[in-house]
Image (tube, rainbow, N blue to C red):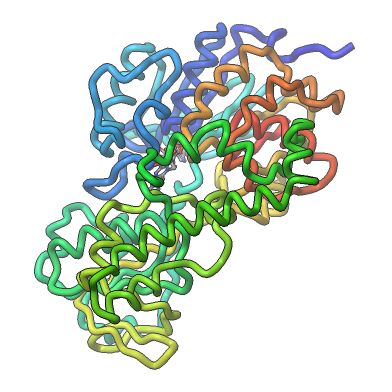
Length: 464
Ligand SMILES: Cc1cc2nc3c(=O)[nH]c(=O)nc-3n(C[C@H](O)[C@H](O)[C@H](O)COP(=O)(O)OP(=O)(O)OC[C@H]3O[C@@H](n4cnc5c(N)ncnc54)[C@H](O)[C@@H]3O)c2cc1C
């Protein structure tokens, strides 16, 4: 007979590591379901990435899809809330929901015991330890800091090299010659901020990526892409419904046509900005239009284009360069194609380091690195043992916060299914989300569990 360990242990103490949206959402769900959840947060503020993000950052989702299902926004934020508004929301949520969030508490180590976990942590007063029945790890994908490889010649460069995480005021761009490297959301933001303040802005990237325009033929992008319809139209790697299987099987050509159409609409919208402009403007715009398929970009790192990025490219206020950086010279950045880009400030927006979970016992850490070749953007679930540590990472689309409710409330459907290797119910299918679908499969044994969980979280790592 399958027993539900979570239900058997109702009232158990559960440690949650991290007070970003995942940790707060998890603690809320656990508390509502009769568990004692204690959240450990090493920073002095809750909010995770939003607490350390650059000024003027805005959410890419709309506010309606980014809140706890039982705590709506208490104030009217922007359609795409600012970082400050998001921080305010989470602070209010913690207070309102009376969550036990311990700020300035860094978890140092987890030690496995016969009936739970010994958790070692430090705060301003010293080092301490407490025991918990279960542990939830919600330390985010970007917690290890920015990926910042060394480049040859950095020492001779007369300017400053930073990542976007070092930007504490946008005045840093004032009257400078700026070079931004990368083509993710942060790089596009940095280029756009700089273009309004700097003498000149060079945007350097290996490959232009598809970004999502706010409006698609007059319809807000969320209605087309961040909807059940948009989700169904993506290739489903995990347990598609029969209808989805049919769509992505015999009707695959139609699906491809749909995404090609979306891509050509985006392309047309960008190209239109070059109308009545000179050839140089057209070439600049052409340089930022991807030549590859649209869907992989949407699934792996869909970024909303800052409204003025493409117009600034058209106007020449942002100079795009599709090239590889080979190093730094005294005056700027050296590209592999032989060009030198003169600049005073180089902003490297090259992504984040892969999470390493330093507090996990070695054997679990090794398993993480082995089981997670897709690193930050993949979903990996490995069942090591039956129900000992539940480690989860939730990120990207906060719309999965609402399904997160279902995790505990549905008892241990997840765990039972994992143990019995039963198929997920259609209910979980309905809760699937886009980023989950974009992940690569791992081993057969974990695939089933992973796909089930993917319907709950967009990025989850579970040890049981
Ligand atoms: C620039 C940027 C823009 C983004 N924009 C969007 C967007 O528009 N829409 C969207 O849905 N998502 C977006 N994201 C993704 C974002 O990561 C998620 O929305 C979400 O905020 C992630 O929350 P999290 O709780 O999983 O992780 P995090 O927010 O990273 O929180 C993890 C927390 O764990 C804490 N922690 C780590 N180690 C320890 C330890 N040992 N002890 C105690 N505490 C620890 C960290 O201090 C941190 O507070 C963006 C991310 C970035 C970086």
